[in-house]
Length: 251
Length: 232
Image (tube, rainbow over the protein chains, first blue to last red):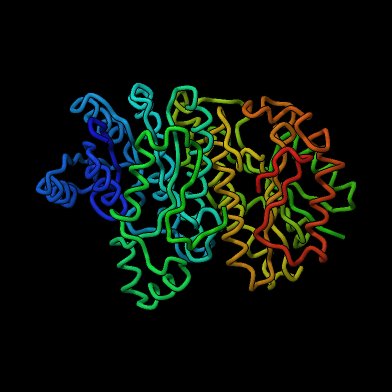
């Protein structure tokens, strides 16, 4: 990926940081688009100390101007954008609980950060991605494919993002842009919080995962980002790659 | 006698109404008050409850609720799509579906006089395939399909069930400009040589889903497009 440029929203931690780290290790210049630069800047600095080309820009993905500005800054600084990964999602709100009781404010935030932000990323990134014959990647989830009793509204937006990818792949194929989604399961800060609340969670998940462990953001999920960002996947578009150790096998 | 609440508006909904009456259902139609281009921020998610309450007053508790979400009929490429059009095509149908779920839940779970009813969404198969020109609409409909699954999981112990009936876009959009990709409007692609009639092909399936003999299916998707889409 030498000479390639990628931008990852929600890149300060978790799966976003893992994907960014992997792409940078393979030679890409990577921009972490982060809501909080106080976490994004140290993350970028740590990777730079390891010899990687990683920078941080502030970006609230629920603000259209922020999305356009982050992408414009990236193109201005690096001259191109080859891969745009929209990974960020609304803070800690996952739409948990009965559908009839879920916070509507939380629902709107989920829609804004997942769906509206995908729309904004698509509009803002199209020209640069077309020029680079690049790749757009959205993050989805098994919850969007099989539905979820625990986090049903999170499943709703993730399902919507998955078909958004299929439609965009059809629409942008003639422009030479590939569009795919990744459905990961990995140990992240959000996952750590869930485990702290329910220590038995990790054992249950490991038991239901054929590979017997939960993934690592950089070493297990990251290489899939490298694949989708690079020419290795040049004939792959409109697809969902489930990267969870085999837990979900419904496709 | 099956009591059916049909939530939606337009030519396709009118045809379903005719078909359900032909199946012997007593049908009340609830038209969502949201205007197609209403700002999502001003959309009252409790709005459908008012219409549903009125319909239940006339009809009694329903055995079957059918939601046909309002989605725009014409194609728009994402990069040329105005924000308000994106909202109308993606976010507002999702809001509408969530509002319907929240409003009908008390009508369908087993504390209702019907002892547990069924909620069915009728959606175009673009939710499954995605389609150029209908990116936002397809995304919304697939989101609704996940909502049906989540509701099925949450309501199962209460005896209420959900289903999704997926139909050919050319039928769903009822003569309007349907998704242009993949030749989906070409009846010649359907194994049965035609893509379906709301009255004679789709209403009987909805009737079947309301029948107690279908009570053990929930959260699932039935594709009724004459065999155009077989990738499930």
